[in-house]
Length: 389
Ligand SMILES: *Cc1c(COP(=O)(O)O)cnc(C)c1O
Image (cartoon, rainbow, N blue to C red; front, side):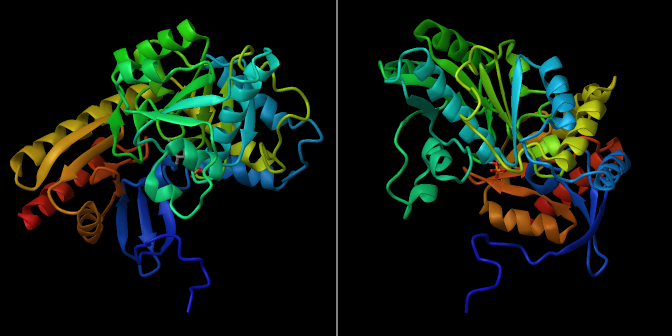
C-alpha cells in the first residue's frame, strides 16, 4: 500500500516536536544539534524570538491579499534586497525552483524584448541543482532527476563546472545566459573558484549574455557574505534566492538589474502566493537581523572555527574521512563509507547533517551557532569518526 504521504523522499524516522535556536527536540524528548537547518533554510535557528514576533504580529493583521494590490511588505523587503545587492528590482515567489523559473523566463524575455528572440538557450553546469520543476530539472541536467519525465524542457546546454574553455566553446548565436551556483550545493559542496566566477562575468559581457547566479543555497549569509558572489568581487545580472530568506517560512525571490528585467512588463509573470504578507513579515525581519553590525562577522568567525575543528577531526581519521571542503557555513566532508550511513551515525550521536552528491556530508548549521555549539558538533564528529574506525 502506498503511504498517505507520497513516498518521494527516503525519510529518516525522526519526527520533531519543537525547535529552539540550534536544537531540535523529538516527540519522545531527545535533543539534536541541528547542522542540517532544514537544508540551509533555518538560517537564524528555530523559533528565533524576533521571527516568531514578526510572524505572529502579521498573522493577527492580514494573511493574504494577492498581487492584484500593493503589498507593503514586498515593497519593504524588495527595498532592503536592492539596497544590499547589485539588483534594481525583485520578483517574489514561494520556493527556490520558482525563483529559478523566473530567472530563466527573464533571461529569455530580455533577449526577446531586445529583438533577439532566437537567443533562448542557457548554458548550465554539470552537477548543478536548480529545483524539481520541469524547467529546473532540465537546467540541473541530472539524469536521476530527469529519468521518466521526458520530454525534457529544451534550451539548456551543460558544460563541466569550473571549465571556462568548455563554456566558451558552448556559446552559440542562440545562447541567452549563463547559469551557475557560486558553490554547488546538492552537487556536493563544490566551490566555484573566484577567478572562474570573474571570468564568467567577463565572458557574459563579451558575448552579450546574461549572468545568472543561483544563490538559493549560498545566499543569505550562508558563505560569510550576504551573497556568495560578493567574495569574487563581481555581480550577476539575475539572482535566485529562497532557503534562508524566510528563515523557515516558504519564500523565494528573483533579483535583477533594470536592464535584465526590461522585458518583465505587466502580464509576463505571476504567482498567487508570491510575496504573501506573512512571508514578507518574516523575510523583512531576517533582512533586518542580517544587516545588523557584527552579524556576518560572527558567521565568518564561527565558520572558521568549525572548519578548523572539522579539518582537525578529519586529519585524525584519514582512513574514515577523505576530504573537507566548502565556504563559510556551507561545509562538507567526504567519508570513505556511504554518506547515508555517516549521516545516520551522526544523527544517532545527536548531530543532524545532510547528504549531497559526490558522497559528501553537508554541515549547514544555523548562522547563529556559538563557539560552544561548534565544539559540541566537532566533538560528535570526532567521536563518530572514532566509532567508525
Ligand atoms: C534547494 C535549491 C533549489 C530549489 O529550491 P526549492 O525551494 O526546493 O524549490 C534551487 N537551487 C539551489 C542551488 C538549491 O540549493
